[in-house]
Length: 365
Image 1 (cartoon, one colour):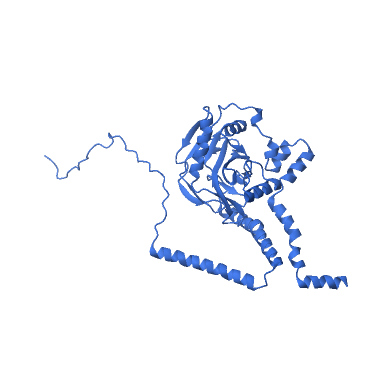
Image 2 (spheres, rainbow, N blue to C red):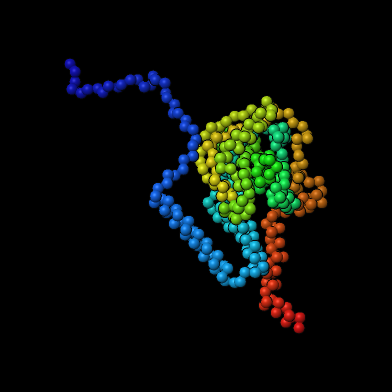
């Protein structure tokens, strides 16, 4: 005798079937679809921006007669805004909204999010230098007034500068330990380059992965104006994964002792902008390059004092007080140089004004 209730059919035994893994979709950057209203809204936004800019220009040029001293004043105004005011404003604001822990991005000296950290290394410094040099990479000069002037002159004259310095980016609260680059066709405006940071002792990557060094590799495609600070800077290629894979290929193919391990989906794929306002795209994968089996010698370790980017390292590695003084003088910050120059230049525009000349004449009499 059966009851009035029915037992539902359990169906096929799914536990016995092998679990189906979700197919991993290749990373693709999809842009927003444009609509008529969206395009109109964007055009009105551009028109409003252009109109406000033109209004500012009219106010600026109609407010006084344009002369050589006024041109110099405008130049000084741009230098003050782009190299002093905006960097400090960004540094203040970024302390509020930018996380002060590892998120897979370096930071600019102004506090803005910089290039993605897209490489990890295992091995000591000498082994990394040996691997990079064997792969045809050149150690970049440190930033000094002399090297800064050299890269400006070489960019304007299209003259090769294979050891041109790279701008400082911060990770773990400090600037890169060193950087390597490959100039393209003798043009200093186009180059492959990668920055290296030594990981703190005992520090682990998210997920428990061990790494001795982290690196950020990008490709400079041209020289332009920073979107956020209005400074002259290199503009990078949008797809940073191409440069990441290029670095891995050149290094691994140069020495069979080098082993590469890939961490897929180390971070979610994303598109964003770096500290110069350049668009960047990455799939979030992180290669770990092991150079622990690479044979290196003392010649592979460059002069650390020449590469030192902070006073602590300089004091630790220097052999005399005179050497410390000379090194710190050559490493003086660009903002200090610009500020000192402005102190000397700022009075010049007022010296050309009629009122100033009349005052000097009255003083003379």
